Length: 169
Image (tube, rainbow, N blue to C red; front, side):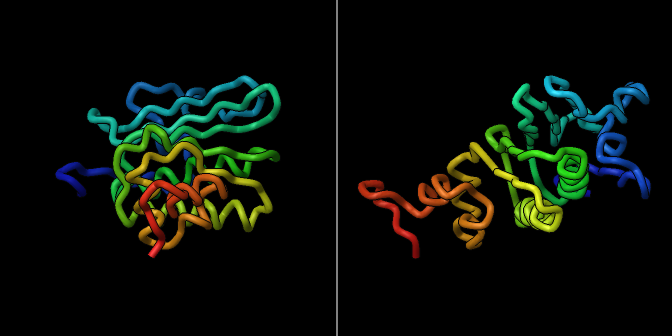
């Protein structure tokens, strides 16, 4: 239980889509993956307060974009890692993870992002975390993982650019 909310872990061997399928989702909705460009896989959260929302869309040019929206913390980290790992494993091209909707990230959430990046590296896949908020970028910088997790332009913003007043310490 985290933040007063309990989460039941998914059973062993379940795919990320199965593990994160919400109440009332059909089996087809729970297991459908983003196999065809233009297909989307929206996976509702399994709690009424929607702590995390995970979805994936494959564009016509073959880029898979995962959207991570909500709170990435102890309660949602494993589910998020499973989901994004499944996308990486099922997709040959670059995977982009949009963090613009991430409203909270604690140490467990940061660890989840590191685990996702390590999985992509082991799989030989390109992974980009994009559009992090200033707060998420700052957490990455403080932990010293901004240069590993963010594309170079975003890592530079985290470190401070000329005239920004921010310096890397």
